[in-house]
Length: 234
Length: 234
Image 1 (cartoon, rainbow over the protein chains, first blue to last red):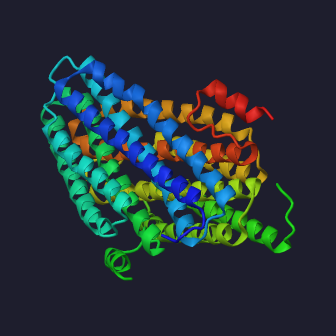
Image 2 (tube, one colour):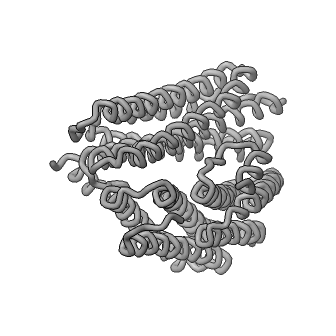
């Protein structure tokens, strides 16, 4: 990062980074809680995940506000400005990850509260959720350590998660065809799988902002090979 | 907006606003083309929508880049800075709307290319798509005219679109239960409806950035009544 004459400014930037990581920690916790409560059929805990989304949203608004103020007051130059822009984008994705965790909890509640026939075991959902959670953790870690190598890794994981989603989709379709009584519940499960698949997309976005932050290159929409060379080149 | 000593700066801001509206125009066109091609079963045109998404992405990257440069070079004060932050957020949502239009086109292609049994008439999809397109148009119009009243209107429309989605979901479930051969295609149709429902969410986000831009208040996660008073208060 650039050197500033102002120590105070350094502290402000550091504080924003710390708060992004705190928000990330809360979001990770939401995914974990939603999945565990789902596996356990714990409706109360699922509701707690739904309620706690407000806290994620409040953190987004507050960090966003700090970013705007810091730009206005400090008029940051290249590197610092990129950091702030990367933060503004990162927290948008973190907030959406929070939304997806909330959706998982909502769907879980619906299934446990309405299903009279047979609640599924959610084994595939749990597996997918573990992958997605690992991706979020990796993306936040990359943000903390300004590690550009995560982007490539997460892109690969994201493709794996897409494959898992498609496998789950095919399995659910078979399930529904064999026994139409499971249709309603299978659709809820499908939306859960979709929410997890999106968490992977958002984690990948975050790792790409880290590349932008460090290298100044926007790799979001590049083809995979070009992403790789942009992230590794200096 | 604040007065600047620099005419050049005014021109730069105006140029960014114009490009956001151009990007919005392209995104509107993508939704319209996807829906019309879907109704007509025009696979070639559906493919064109898929291909054109790259153009939407390129516009996002380029406007984003301009915003960062303008902040670094001009060190804008309150009102102008809010405008630029609002643009950065708006184009993210426009890009995602483009993604959803692309998804509609992709699903449409899949249905026409694989369905041997019975392609649905997509009447509800068309209805929902018209509502969503109207919302995007209204949000862009609000951005162009800095009209804070759109947020409330779009929030209402968004609830209507959610209801439409749920009605479509129930109808598709009935359809699948009555005839399991339609399951695969119904799931594709469901994801299309979901994509349209999300377009409504993104349009609503954009109208909320306009309130932030004009009033300096972040209303995104407020309850409906508080949103209303923040948007109308001065």
